[in-house]
Length: 370
Image 1: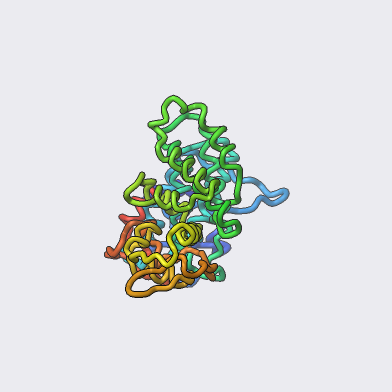
Image 2: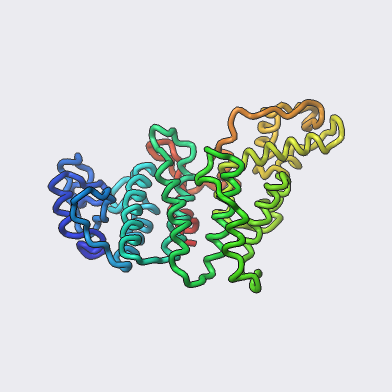
């Protein structure tokens, strides 16, 4: 447990106690389950809350980098990974956890900007956290969880990573995530997590300092190949790059493309329906492999919904045109097997109050902290 007032000043703790702004994640063991007005703030659990700048208001002194790193470590290891801070506490929903964490992370980013401090490794972990939380909450109705602020925070962390000028091995990861998120934005538009930008301008800007050491940037170079394939509309090639038989971009690389994964599958299906012979019969197992589905049954359901006939345990191609699907959104019940690589092993997963399937803390740790 952190020492008192390390992550939040004594002045703010007193002000928030007086105004009943005490989160269940910051309350004492005796009061965290009580109504908002009856909670008592624990100075060792309190983390500075984001506040908009008001005209004429006194700006709180920004925290030192060590305090900000301690705050993020607390948020990540005690709250995000477990969804509670007291061992006796039943985990809160992931929506509540992410809403609380996003607010405190926003305050961390403000302090970094105001104090002109930077930490690339912190920003990389924040990028991973935002990607994971956006994916895990992708099937939650917007009235329960609005992803707008998480999407903004994701873009902030990607940009802020470069505020520290030292070259790190982690540059490969952040460049990979940035390119793949841009590919998603190009393909999905409003359904993506960040706004579309100029992909190859990013490559031009960041490639000069490592052009002689390309072996140290395999993920970034693979992400550029995926971007090029998307530009050439070679969508089946993208799935090949993402398949287990090809280069492994890791969990986060797949999560970056999750919002457009079903669109890529559909566009690949359109390609195959044109390329194969008329009424050619293909085994569902082969289609599952080509479209990166975990089971033939899922592949059959996807293709039949797209209008392909299914006869004699085979999918029939070039018999009917492929029709648009009603939705290309993430479907975690199908996509977890591909994006998280957990396949049929759901040991330790729990379903929270918002019906979100939450991975155990060791899976979350691997995804965010790696």
